[in-house]
Image (cartoon, rainbow, N blue to C red):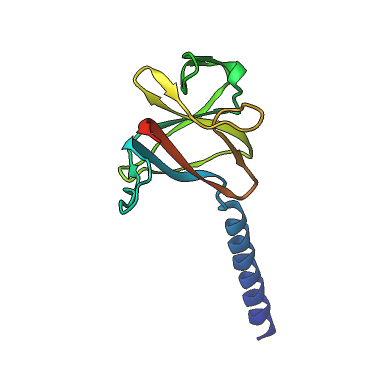
Length: 152
């Protein structure tokens, strides 16, 4: 009887150790969020509720953190014909604009494409373009707005 209990205990310990190892390695880390296309007059006005942004299916280009000095910019616009940092990954948003991509911890820049040009319209204080940071075992949440056709 004692041998049966011993083997049962060993079996349970093996199962529990496999379960806890599985949970530790299945933690997601990366970036998730929505891509929205915004166009037209976005100026607030009395009695008019703003329309909710429209999710868009598009490809996201994820580069190493990219500074304004590392791109070929089209004038003073948010369009870029060349990006000189390393392309890490591409991912696609669904028809609602949702995307999720697993990435190693680090700092990245996210771009979309409009025609032949990359597009990103946000900068941090150091002039890094559309920055996002991935932390260990965390999903960074982002909202990307393609608003080159909007008026504010």
